[in-house]
Image 1 (cartoon, rainbow over the protein chains, first blue to last red):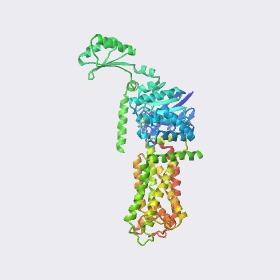
Image 2: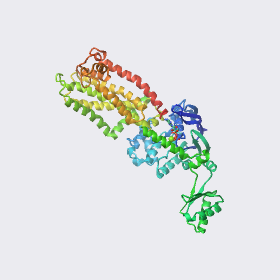
Image 3: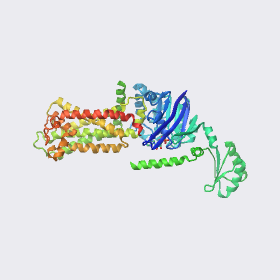
Image 4: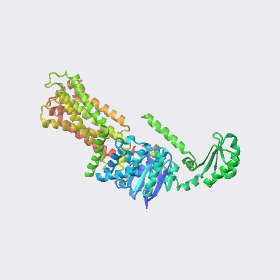
Length: 330
Length: 265
Ligand SMILES: Nc1ncnc2c1ncn2[C@@H]1O[C@H](COP(=O)(O)OP(=O)(O)O)[C@@H](O)[C@H]1O
Ligand SMILES: [Mg+2]
């Protein structure tokens, strides 16, 4: 059974000048996680908003849990949970107040709303801060509370729009743990992200989108093999560069890349950690002391580079420029 | 239908909770009108020495009406803030009636007005305001004020939903209502205004409200050039017409706008 189906979604803004979605297709099997991966401005939020009945597409068709999102939005709202790109909770109220309020709006009795609030605060490690106004919460705590609010009725289908953007590494790890637990409980999840490692960690399947279209789809392994796998990267002293290069080329059997400015060499490796160990051993034998050595997995940028020929960062830079302009206008 | 009402009450309750968490809002909301009462009472107190009971009798209805017109800006700001914070999006993703959120907000702002009017009434009494019409009519006067505030609140809902910035919409609403309260009979008789302005002033809903409330409190209005005009003859009727028209226009507009709030972000 498909829990989410979208066919040919088109959405334009500013009288057609901005094409946010340009014939987007996707589907998510019940009980699985689809990660929508794309840079800023790719159309992730627009997709989520249409599926969550907040926005009407110009054309195309979508169902959630088999229900048409345009024709029967109210029935869709009964089975979904949504946690948007920015925590949408009442900042002057406490975490507890917020959860009880949302519980009441889902038509739980006062008592049921309160016990559900207690349960969720516990589940998201927020019990201690339950009686503090959200204003005093850290970014990670806000996002967790926001997520808790979207889980009040144990939705069948959950939408998370960039759940970790803006969080520090610790907040990110905590969020990942929480999401992984939810997934184990069997919720169907559509998650958007700008980070390949996040999609890799949380999603069963990944759809890469750019300019409002899905440009690639598959498991994270499939995508990575398309992009080219892992690389080993080594930084050495200037004097060692040439000798290091010889060693690396010999061990990996490939032609390495040299960034002279950073004194960094990199080369593709096929069998991960094992190759790294060999490189280290050989360097040691040659009496070369690397300043830094690391395995690098392909990033969103690498995925974009190989799929579209342009870097994701360009899109991000463009977007920030636009945002700045918008901000300046205000 | 019952669902819609109980959902709206949850939203209203949230607003009241906010007041307990941020009491400054309530304090500021009541201090400001009390300050107006004191300023006008003692700065212009010498005016209208010929008025029985003194200027304060005419002044208080003026300040009451002025204060409730600010509801428009307050509602607009509250809703615009919810839009900015993404709360409206979240509410729209819940299975609740389309009218619940905006209805709840207008009720909350109405309840706030009750508190404000009571505090102002007491302040007025302290500085010598003595309505002469009896308890029932005084009560009706307050009811009329509340309804006027409620009707304006719906215009505020619409303003808040179409705005992009809470502070801007609050300022714009204020810039719109503040002059209206002075181009009226609220603080001085309109007879001293230029002729053309007198016509405007006497049709101004603020004037008809002030005149209606004064009548209900047992005081006569002095009108100028248009003394025989319909609004000055029938201020209560005219005020009610204004309120009905306001709600007739803005309730459906607001509910529609709320429902498509995200279509423009
Ligand atoms: N209300 C709007 N008005 C104009 N353009 C918009 C609006 N909302 C989104 N867009 C544009 O649509 C495109 C997709 O936006 P969005 O779905 O928010 O992307 P993402 O979430 O992937 O960053 C972007 O180019 C964005 O600038
Ligand atoms: Mg987005």
